[in-house]
Length: 119
Image 1 (cartoon, helix red, strand yellow):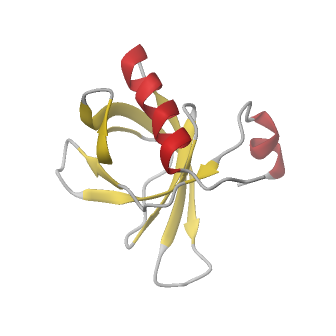
Image 2 (spheres, helix red, strand yellow):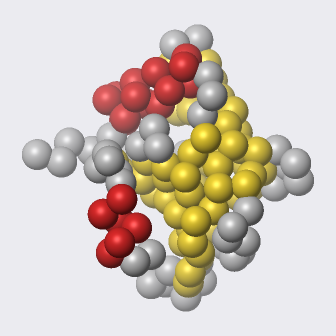
Image 3 (cartoon, one colour):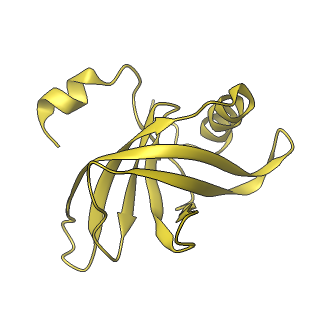
């Protein structure tokens, strides 16, 4: 990712205490595990490369029920993909397209409850 991409973010990405699983609903396969998140986007780490410039229909499993949800369904566009520092893995950055206001609230609650305290 370029510095320019990072500058475009309006919210700071937050690391969670869990590597939550995100699935591709169309293929049913594990797309990757969550590294960091905001309501606007996320970074995943995976064992296989993720195609950039593609929008995926995603399901993220939550570590506990949040606002009556055990999963969050959303579309996310892969903005970039690259080898991770550990050559066995790949990293990918996504812009999330979340239509349901309840899902946005659930992600905000997820960040409050399960993100590292950055202070």
